[in-house]
Image (cartoon, rainbow, N blue to C red; front, side, top):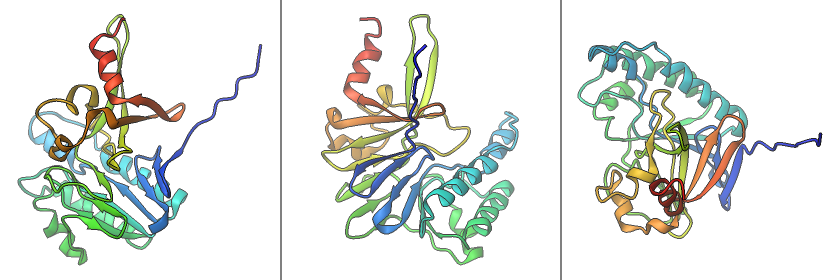
Length: 256
């Protein structure tokens, strides 16, 4: 039997100093910043109020991933690119606890920057307890980062969240396997991060990203053929699944 060497790809440089990470973040080495999105802390309590009882797993899952990001990259800044919490009509008690716990755990290790997402309508009242201001976007000489629920256009290297991208693999007998994924357009320099939420398995990009109703409105301005998908897998780390248009065609005609 031949020996087989399996290489687990933890980081992938897509542009100079811009790395996709199997820790659900994009690491910007030149400014020592890690970008994450869609944590949705407090998800369990909102579901419980609607009759779906879930164990409280979200906070531990998120904080473990962020701890791993800090251990691996030691970023000077952690940019939370929207939807830090779940309930957008009010602040739930679990959200107060989870947000404050997160800030107290990580604020001494890195600078926390909160960008507003569509679920963060009342987040500012919690952040104010730790003298933190929420912003609509982050921009410097090279990067432009916002959540993606509004069309703020794109320029420089634009990083979005909001989409919760995943790739769904289907077999001939109907089996389905969903993999969280990054979406990257090298022509327009747009990258979309996967959701860090434990409970948000993601939206199949082959079905939603190219639809007529764009979940992330700025994407209507870019060409679908330029999107490339990089999945996050447990066994192999980051996997290049190729261009989205090709994946969509295969999903439409899976047995050709």
